[in-house]
Length: 468
Image (tube, rainbow, N blue to C red; front, side):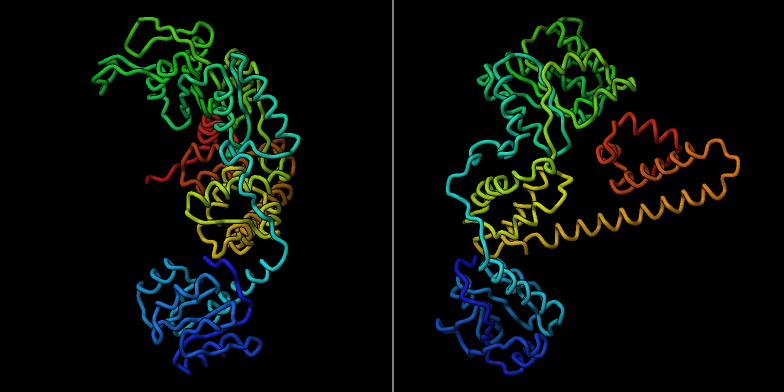
């Protein structure tokens, strides 16, 4: 990893004049390349082409801390591609060179150097949140209210319902509530209601006796029994079936339940924290979620804002995630360029905190210096925004065409509005299913609806699933 860059000059270490001619012709006359026939510590260049065919790869170890080293070779295969990148090369190119690839590499190297000579954000050694939950780090007013509520309800032994879009950190807020509660020394048991089929979820929650169903060779504790005297976190509660909702309601009302295959009442003392990315009041109106269970769970509701609603927190979140993951990656990330932060703030973040964290982890893994730059983001964020814009433009055009066609052929139609809406809705559901490879759970989350609602719509529109 480059610690200190010399400048934006370019040099070539090679014993082949032909190689110099090839590279110089490809980069053009605007860039002047200085040639050295062997390594010397006096090379005054920020970017160095290293011809490993004539001078060897050992010089890479001497150069990589102060220069961007682009390894060049005529040898095909994976040897130098893997070895050079493992030991700190900026890139590795195989001759004969592709003009676009070579120029992109040079422009990226010079661009990073230029960016790092501009304004930078330094990461302090000890960042708030490095030892706690990064997802609830920030100074935005909406997040401050969330933190206040966590502090207020933590030690009050009542159910809590956490709502918000996917990736906003609902699980981390639940853990924070547990950590400040009176039950913090007792178990904290987590179960994702959407990740387990309905047929198995009941056994997971309440346990089963030996022989309760095929394959139940021994009795087993359920999550509620494991969480006794502690806290249970029911994630994605909106995906739970109505039959299981009735049994959960009984636990909340009476603190009792029955294992599968048993008539014996078991008592538990458990605090319930639930979370969902769905609109439970709407599900109640649609008779998909029990109203009595909703009111039992919703004693205190904590609504987590999307990252778009708290973009002023992105700089502090970036510092927190960078410190956490740079340590794990064995890198010394000291800060980032101002442009890096600006790019993060410009992006829409449909995946919220989780997507931001994964983006920063990728930046750290691929960064060539101790500072993160916009070049670590450009392929991800710019391409994603372009794809999104292209999709929206295409869909908008399709809808306009559909509406125009319907209006032109509507003469006397009484159901024009409802028929058009149904066609658009069917197309939307088909697209979501196709993009998620026909995974109902993922498609429902993408659409922001319940799996049961999606299943009903699939039947209503007679949407056929692929045989495979």
